[in-house]
Length: 114
Picture 1 (cartoon, rainbow, N blue to C red):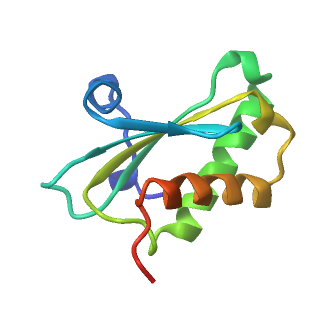
Picture 2 (cartoon, rainbow, N blue to C red):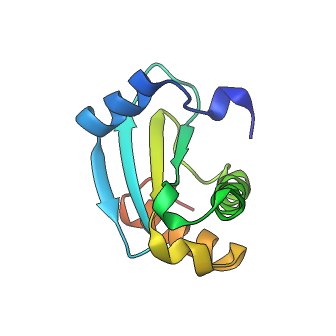
């Protein structure tokens, strides 16, 4: 994932939490806020310490980054998206994670029409 596609600063996370909308399924929570000045979407990932050790948390983040990379052309531009992983993600493989993420993006109309 390119640096331009990442949310890193705490202020940017907080802005998305406060001014954005949220939606969830059993595995993931998504917060998103429209950013009209941006030419592409940006993502922020959050995996809490309750989910597992560092190896598990990093694996989850790696899977989510790869899923976003594969869905990159389908996601609408001008959005900041923050993903929070829930407990069931520690037992998921990549394909289940991608399916769960796609479901959230589809439900919130963040995917471009095919």
